[in-house]
Length: 166
Image 1 (cartoon, rainbow, N blue to C red):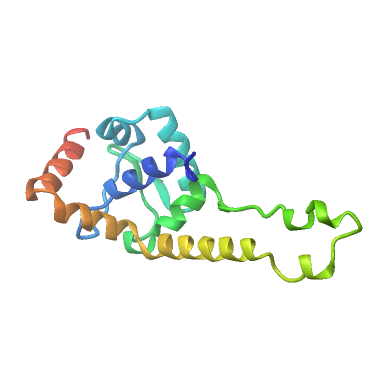
Image 2: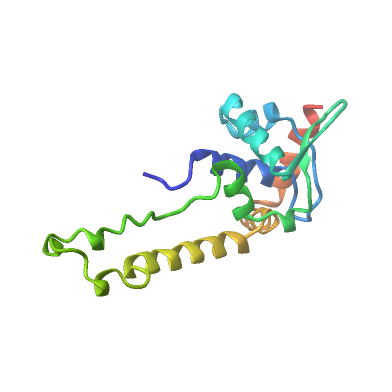
């Protein structure tokens, strides 16, 4: 089972489409984002409600309106997005099973439960490293990585597709 929902993938890819590799913002409707990516419109709409509440996107009015990034793409991290969509995820919940040993019928000895559980400590380090890795990558970083892989025409094709929808 995945730790994060598929909404994280949809949200990240969608926010990447709201900018280009130079950091220029573009407005797009949720309907257009869903159609361009082949993802469910209703689900993407719910994701954008969460992204809006987290002040990662803001709605735009008028012809061609929709959503745009609420701040520069170099200031929106993947951690920001994951927490906006799925909430703050813990990868581990310690149940303190170290206190349940059958040998401890007379009561749990002090040594067995003193300090933080070693398993809990290791999992906390893993949590911190995961969050640090997600906080290091931004929407602009990912957009630029995609642009480096894609042919030069791809960014132009995306912009032309978006423009044709207005």
